[in-house]
Length: 334
Image (cartoon, rainbow, N blue to C red; front, side, top):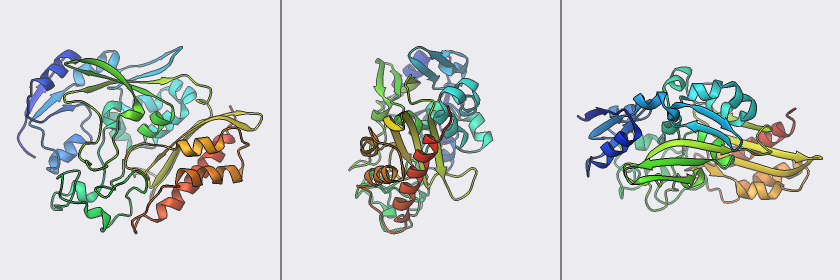
């Protein structure tokens, strides 16, 4: 681990001001640290300044709130607190399940929601600095995964420069439910759709989000909607606990007389970013949800998928995961 300067702040203004005064020196915010500290130990991330924001957890930015407009989750809410919250579990089950199925109980107790959506890929070529060819870590060096061991890598949203999979679960629930994210910096505040937060790798895999320098996630807002109660998160992985998804699906359904009035679908474990399957949604609207329409939706979701040898199986696995999630959501008693 490289030397760094540690600073603990007491309010959001101090946090964003500290980041803005860091100048050209790399600075990172520290909340749970469950990803950041790991990557610092591996010498993958080398911030020269750590800005500890944990003292802000007792503010409204560490709270869960419900209103007529929907659910508000502070960025410093811990994953376990949101997953176990009775109203989140009852009214927003897909969020609770996505959080409950992530990581271990110990990590969920530490990790913040804001940090969770910004977690970085588990690609071995990214996390092991002995591999020189990683465009995400070392721009312009190449992507070792393209012709290397890529069983866990993405089949959607990749490019010739990177096929690293986005590893999170919570983000799939947020993008499926049309969430927004509140951001703050020394220049002011702004709100953007959560779907606009992450960037596909394209030619610049090292630029993973649309956050501006020093900008900080403050909270997430999930709007009230008719499809929330009939929602779930299905995660397929190599083992049943403490493992990242090979394929996952966040599904929210609004059914009327057996037909799909509206639907929201997001996919995980198969894409370079949290992936909204809008083509699958369009294939389902206005139709009865049965085996045939579920299969058509899954085919639409993976129409543009591209395997790279070791991860070819993910295309079929992703389709089966989505079909199963749709069928389970339709069978829910609400």
